[in-house]
Length: 140
Image (cartoon, rainbow, N blue to C red):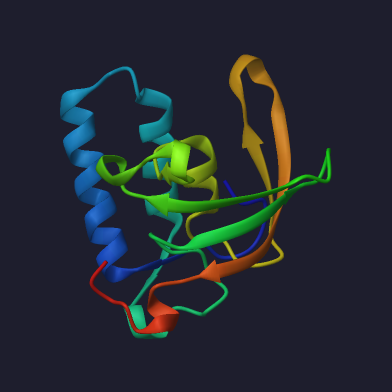
């Protein structure tokens, strides 16, 4: 989760993510940590109308360019709902540690990601390459 700043969510993303959380809680105990992270995100979020979300905020279906602060490497991902995730094409699930950490964060924000075996990874959001709301795409 973000280390500083406001966590922004649009009303449609908030409602749909609540649905994802509710359906997965009933279906799977193996995702307990991921579901808890998503629930924490939803509890902390500043929820706004889609037209009001700042253009530098990572929303659902946003494409994000980030930099690993330890290695200097860049990565580009699109934040997707679980059923639409395809890691091979760069569409990562919002339930993944990276997905949950990025959604609601802003350009320039530094984030500490939890990794397996207690390791951590520090990244910075370089730019929101594509944000649906900024392009007037409110029905994704």
